Length: 111
Length: 115
Image 1 (cartoon, each protein chain N blue to C red):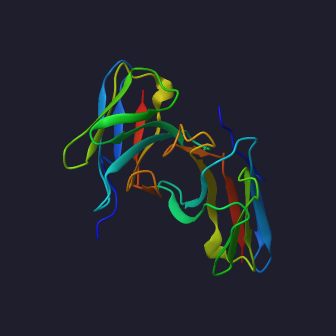
Image 2: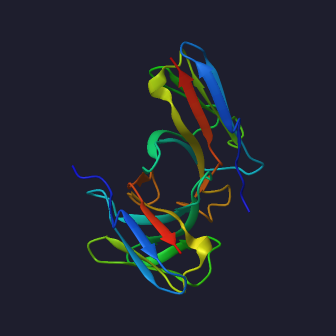
């Protein structure tokens, strides 16, 4: 049973560029949540997708957007990258709102 | 805004010692989850507590949810070097049911167990 997978593993971008991160949920899960984890901090909730709709959103600017596909996989898009966007981006999947299982993350470095 | 205060931030102990990590908030959560995270990896779910006053045991780890569902603790008995890692608590939802599915994380406790 495959767990949550994320791609790419690492990414280096320049300020002002745009980036797309991808996530495939654990088999049987229908909800995907995205989190940003800065070094030495706990993860911060970005948003959650269920039935291809954004259901919950944290305190992140509109530069952060997402999408969920009919197969429940999801993308996180960040536009106009800032140095402060450098972080580990985590995807978590769950069956509706219950226990969330995390992927290995994508390490984004903005230079 | 819901906040979770986790303490201590750092814990360095010898193998065989006991330890407790605390997670406190002024907000009520629907449930509370504990995770362990290794460097460069995603958090791994250890346990979910749902009912106020609930106690769950996972081998040498004991988790407790406060009666008012605002706080939680993780107690490790006879710590081993393999327990080394970042421990995170995360509260889900709120009393009003308006933020279900959203996890609010504490800052984490970095545990180092020396052989």
